[in-house]
Length: 181
Image (cartoon, rainbow, N blue to C red; front, side, top):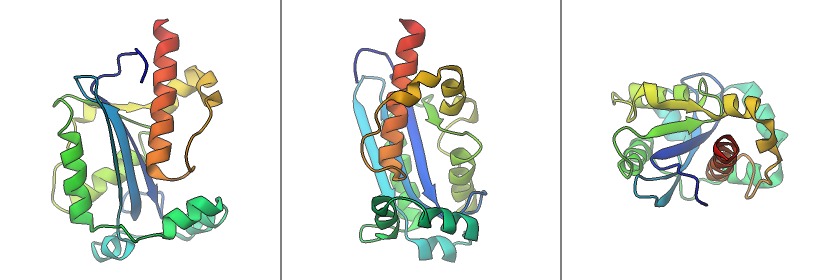
């Protein structure tokens, strides 16, 4: 990832079946650079029925929204062939975050969405959120200040968590280069 120092930064993205905390998360994607400059990726799908069993809900408007998305995104959403339980997903995500220093900065596009929904999963299962709230960062704010990042070509499948996270991380890197150029 070029020469911009984004060490100890993680970008996270989720796909869901609702927009409020307590909604089903179908997929979590994350990527970042650890303190040694090594790039890491994380992706998991969560079994929808296991989320429902744990008290998470879906809303009709989000389901309708999914019907309007591209074929690849809809197929990805419906594919649970490699999906795991909520417990295993959270354990795996914590292990991924362990690759980074304790004080890693965690980014998403819209801090009131991804952080709130993931945080609800941890709380509902009686676990602590594995990052410090003061290290939460919002890419959407940076993109409002530096809209030229939107022009970066999207790679992968839109509305799949890892592809979205990787593209958002590329936008973050682009903006930081512009700021510190």
